[in-house]
Image (cartoon, rainbow, N blue to C red; front, side):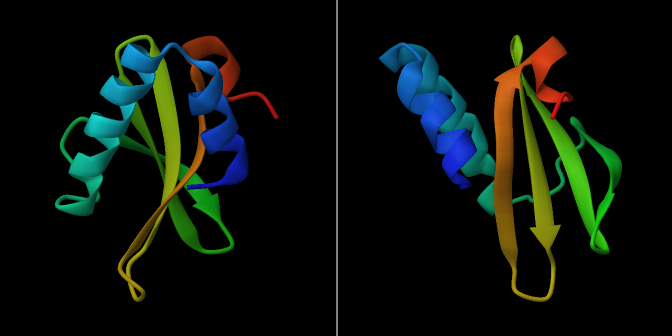
Length: 82
């Protein structure tokens, strides 16, 4: 998980943060679930959006290394802004 995503989770209420973490753990078994959406590429790596209630997580899947990297978590309107 990126530092940006971890900082965001640390600022949330504990119960919301735990709910988001539980949903993100599901990505370890299924990196691209049916409710995720492909939104583009960064350096050839696919970027997906994962909806968690009013929050969105943006993540990359590194298939060769079998890594799911959570790059950003935020509320829906802000997650797409840089």
